[in-house]
Length: 212
Image 1 (cartoon, rainbow, N blue to C red):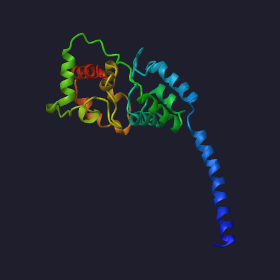
Image 2 (image 1 turned 90 degrees about the vertical axis):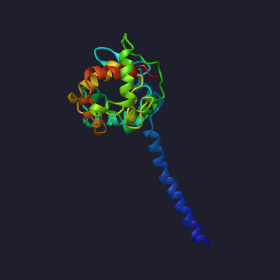
Image 3 (image 1 turned 90 degrees about the horizontal axis):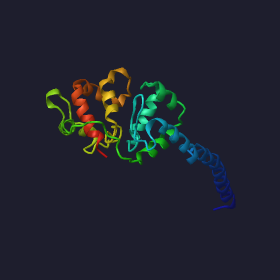
C-alpha cells in the first residue's frame, strides 16, 4: 500500500472519530440521570404510593409496582397524545421525554411491595373471581382473564399486571370503561367490560388484588 493511501485512510479514520464525539456526547446528555429519575419517581409516589403500591385517596390510585414496562410506556404515550384522557395524567405525561418514559417504566417494574388488598370480609367473591379469571364466562363469551394477563396475573407485554392491583381501582375502571377514552391496545377490553356485571367485576377484582 502506498504512503498516499495510508494517509487517506488515516485521515478518514480521524474524521470519523471526530464525528462520533458529538454523537456520543448527545447520547450521554439524553440519558436520564439518577437525580432526575429520583425527582420524577418521588413525584409519581405522591399519588401512587411510596412503593408504587397504589393509594386510596379521593379516588383509588393504581398500583405501578411490578407493572409491565411496555404497558406503562403505552399508557404514558396515550396520555401524551390525549388518546387516553385523564386531566392529571395528561398534564404529567406531556413533559416526559422518551428517555424518561423508558426510565420510569424500568424503575417501577422492579418494585414488589405487598398488595394493599381490599376490604372483602367474605372469601366467596374471591373464589368466584378466581373461577372467572381462570375459566372466563363461556355463556357470555367472556374469555379467561389469564389468557391475556397471565396465569399469575402479572401481565404480558402490552397486557397489564393485575396482581396486587387495588380492587376499587379495577372496579372503577371496568364499570366506567366508556367514560374515558383509551389507547388502541386497550380496545380488546371494551366488549369484555360490557359483558361483566358489577358482582362479577367485584369478584375478579377481589381475587387479583390478593395476588403478589
